[in-house]
Image 1: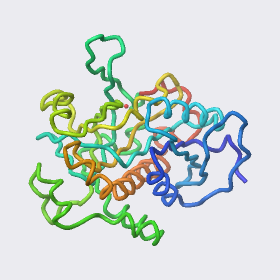
Image 2: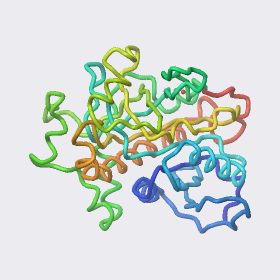
Image 3: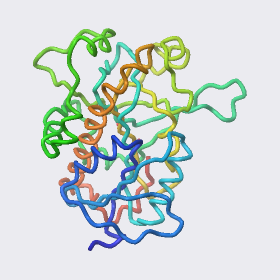
Length: 307
């Protein structure tokens, strides 16, 4: 049985769909370890490549739930150095730059949240990833397009029962969600990873276009290729940990418009499978690239930050 100190990667899953998809992405599953008294997380343990991974699921959607889960995880598994927030219920902001289609995955290198020191509201932007060496090992800074089609198909095939519920929706009843953009060509991937994203992480999640545009009008974040919303989970990541690498992987299930409430459930399971496949791809890249020294040991010299 592995010890707590062997776990170097942690997943915080936004909901049960994301957790189920992430568990399927494991190469091996490990039995549970004795629970610490003041740890409120329930863990799924396993291995991806050469990395041992601890996974838990949030009990709610607030930033405080994320922070509490992260603190408990770091206490129970003190050697975790890579923390990934996996979410399959993100809402994309339609923009000309970096067109994000429903079903795509956004890796957030930055996030924006309500500025607590601004009485008039407004957003303040913050970085997540602070170690360029980590991005290099995961091939995150190249121009090569990432497709998750093969990775999603592999995960779906691993579990017929869950995989059958996570297939990509099709038909006229869901195609309307892509009315903002021209359809992708038949030779283009169905699920694309946008590696240079920004997530607006705030409980005031927009449910209509007017609300969405009041927060993220075109040109608000001109330097970012992809912009999306979550319900505040990313803002709860513990940025004060100097030895912790962390980022948010978000599967897009809606466009934060009037159809979001009705159509979100149609895409959430597929989006969660895409987010799990993306997180696995990143961990596998780290596991096979040791040129920068990221092997789960000796990473405490990084002054970390970030998609």
